[in-house]
Length: 91
Image (cartoon, rainbow, N blue to C red):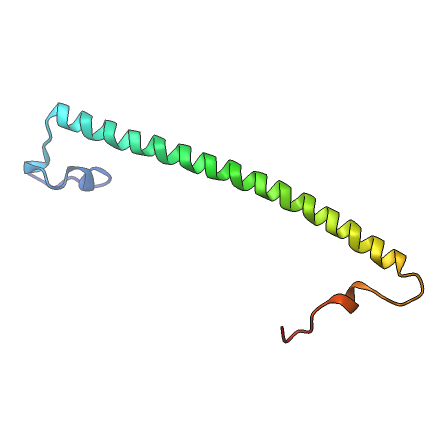
């Protein structure tokens, strides 16, 4: 019998003549589907969590920018700026 090509090649590997009984094949498909559904749920949850983190970080960034602008505006003629608070490049 000729070896199957394409996506079925790996799926049917290890079975005599590449044959599987229908119940075995169905069990294997259901098993893989269950794992794929679980992985999809986990990835979806991780994506939602990351989106919440991004939103929180963006809000914190806006708040810090506002504080920095307030500090720069409040410095008046003292010449203080954001550059005065930056670390030197060797850090």
